[in-house]
Length: 357
Image (cartoon, rainbow, N blue to C red; front, side):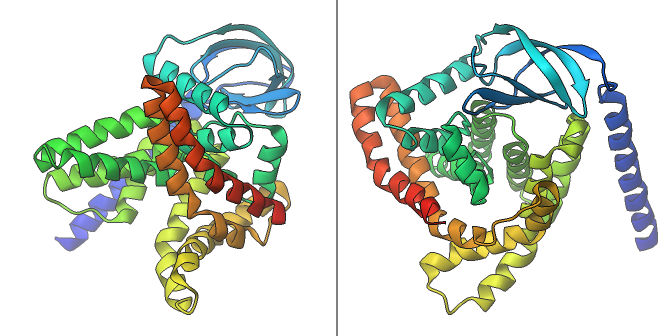
């Protein structure tokens, strides 16, 4: 009986792999070198703004457009250009259609509130931490990349965990656990739309959904199984993520955390707890991530684990203050602005730690 179950599992695994491979090749755009292509699509990932350009990836192609007109997450765009080694040469933005989606509009209002309430780069740091916004001064973005901390200033699994924990903590006071889980799952879904469909946050949301769904049926599910299910669901829905660096790094970082963090923590017990937690988290995540970053970019900041350990403790507080002040600011702008000032000592500390390295 055990052998039969094992055979069925292998067959199921092979079937899933074949489905993903089929989906990948059947949905991949067939762009040839030198083709003049016209892309009409919705921007589902926050563009990265540089000094004179803005970068966005559409239909698997890297596209660098003039900084203006500025495009934002949720816009409908039409871009034309010639394919050259995975990017568009001389791309032209033919049209930009702003979205009427209420969640997208809420995101824009929140980011606008942060930008108008505190100076740069404090506002960008808050907007990135709370909503995954990558609209920030180009120099600050480069500093984040060079210090290996860019992942901290975009919405990720930590954000999803905090949103889920907050919603569960509130709803279980008024609802039965099963209903509280449903409300939490809906809240996570809204947050994913609000913060952007980047691979790390989608992965975290699916893992959270798997764990909470299992709990609603009175079952437990291992973190490895939740990760595997999230990978399968993501690649079946959007196979192009198979070649997305953000997806790859997110999976590798999560695997490193689950595989190494406990062991590293046990070996670093002599380090004070307030610093050890961030250090062990960073070291465990970097075990699998560092080789990929080095192979991709030809460099890796060896001080990255230490930098992350020094700043990671600020992220939950920045998110809490930023999220709360943003909600208040939409209702009573002046009060929200006053509350938001509390975040500046944290963002000042974050910024100056980066400058040390």
